Image (cartoon, rainbow, N blue to C red; front, side, top):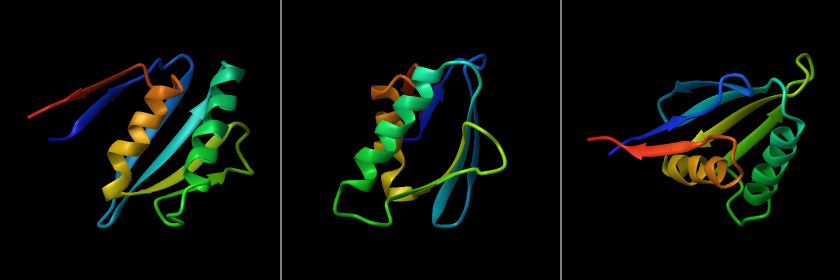
Length: 96
């Protein structure tokens, strides 16, 4: 069952691309500095665990306040739950 997420488009833009073995996200923080700081907490959560290839974070040097994130498919739900925990997305729902 896939997860659908909702976010405030006035605060963050999220683009998702599904690849064969992973999912690539591009998150651009538009207004809220605290959300950008929260994203650093999400990054810290995954970088501090023992799995090095679960979620990879890249801060876009050409675009201020934009992350490119590569998420292994088996960590997709964990990543979205972390975004929810830190209020980057404001709603998650299971769909059949």
